[in-house]
Image 1 (cartoon, rainbow, N blue to C red):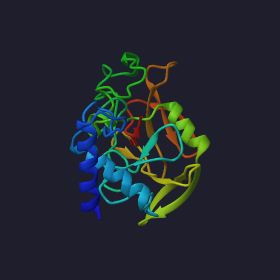
Image 2 (image 1 turned 135 degrees about the vertical axis):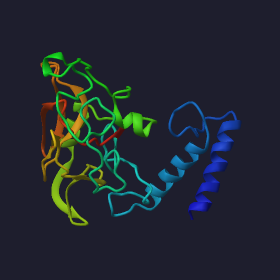
Image 3 (image 1 turned 90 degrees about the vertical axis):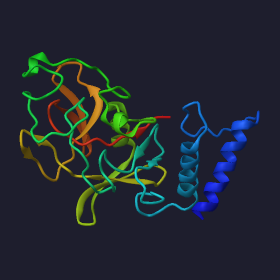
Image 4 (image 1 turned 90 degrees about the horizontal axis):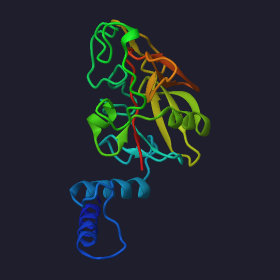
Length: 235
């Protein structure tokens, strides 16, 4: 079936690339029609034609952009994760590499203490956005407004997937994603069974905090903290 869909998608993209018509084959809106558009189209066809009961992912080739009926699509898994229930990487806010130790001393955007932090405002789609740097395309870190929308408009319930504590988030359209309770890292310590997911938005009232989302709410955390990142696909 996938082979048939791929051939169909290839013909579709080729046709729209060479014909003057109103049909669109540029699936990722990058101004080009190529093999990436073919794969995105196949993914979209499989997702809509054969939804899976497991986070609605059509296959195991993560990540997928899952529509929850909100303003943006949410990724099915965290940055650096190969499945929805996996923790993925831990990143200080505005950094794109993991560390073994998280402190002001080795935080990139300050000079050893919180009073010297650089105010970056909103880093979505920039060189400081680990989701965009690692995944490319229109994948970015969610803004605090997008996290708020997820909290207000979607339903949450604790469950387990393959023995991992996760929060199942179900959108108004019935589609779902799983958010693992992967904790966070401060110094060399790691918390357990809580959610700490960075937004792209720095706290304008303090240069050393940024907004992060947890279960049923959001708050600010010190930006040197190692938290997970769940990207969104911005249309």
